[in-house]
Figure 1: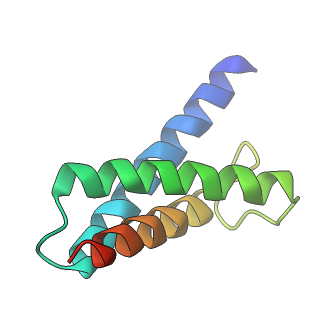
Figure 2 (figure 1 turned 90 degrees about the vertical axis):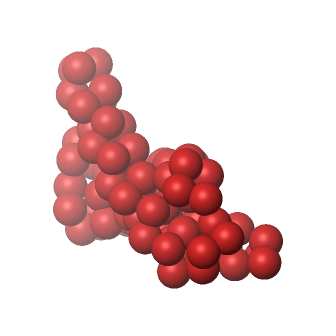
Length: 86
């Protein structure tokens, strides 16, 4: 059971990082790659956990956590921070 949860959070972190990278690229050239990925991970994990806590239907399900919510949360978090630092 615990290994499944670790794998689920690993998948959430990977998808959130990619979402953050995309959000940073959309924000402009001033957003750093590492910062965008880290912000994406933070935003994606928060979005996936909140969606799971609210019993939202997962779109791409991994142990109850949605990878699509993770990628979307990462994209939004990195884009907002990247765009506001111009």
